[in-house]
Length: 136
Image (cartoon, one colour):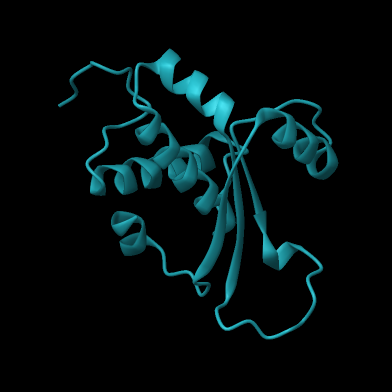
């Protein structure tokens, strides 16, 4: 996340990362997004919720929920390690918590560049290039 820290300066300093099964992610996706299927990662910003106004010791950012079964399948399919793919999904989720989205091509490109930069800072290759392909 060092590379991400260089590009964004969130005011928050606390988040939750949950590894869940596909069934739970599907239920969350249906309840909060109206989509009745599992997805690889969901992000819930605390700023968007109706949490009690108690003063926490750290500013909360939100929750990143990763569907572990889906992540495992995607990693195998892409020929990547589960560790690398989980790192990518967590970074993707954190970017959503920071307000980034990929609803259009321009926003998706911005998000992908930040993901690639953050992953590179961790020694992880570009996830948008097929595994084993050497890029210049």
